[in-house]
Length: 151
Image 1 (spheres, helix red, strand yellow):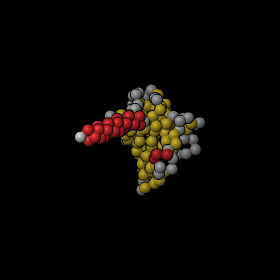
Image 2 (tube, one colour):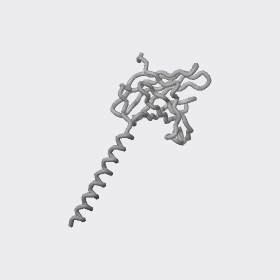
Image 3 (cartoon, one colour):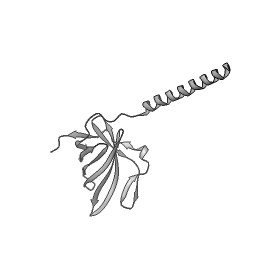
Image 4 (tube, helix red, strand yellow):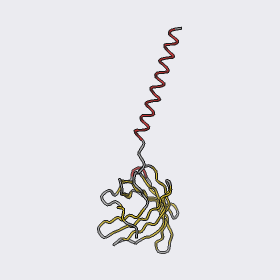
């Protein structure tokens, strides 16, 4: 009888210890949500290329406008909708080039009060461009979108 009680006690302790370890590892993996107000206007400049982003936020959903002004490439201006997931914002940007509409997936990494745009291999399906390997994106940390006053 004492041996059965001992086995039960050991089994219970092992189960309890494994549950506590699972809770600790989950809290260590969780990335905190951004602490600043994401809504507003942002600008990014690389040499003579600029981009302007106006971001509206409602809960974890975002929407707004995005405009790229490039010296050697086509300018584009359009609207987007997306979602915030931990430290990233994934949007679907709708625009047109030569009167042909397209949609492009864009991911921004939130770095304090800035947004770094992600880059990676893109594939097309119909009129939509999306990242082939979204977990391996490189981010433009050297030239992030910086918050500016909205005009």
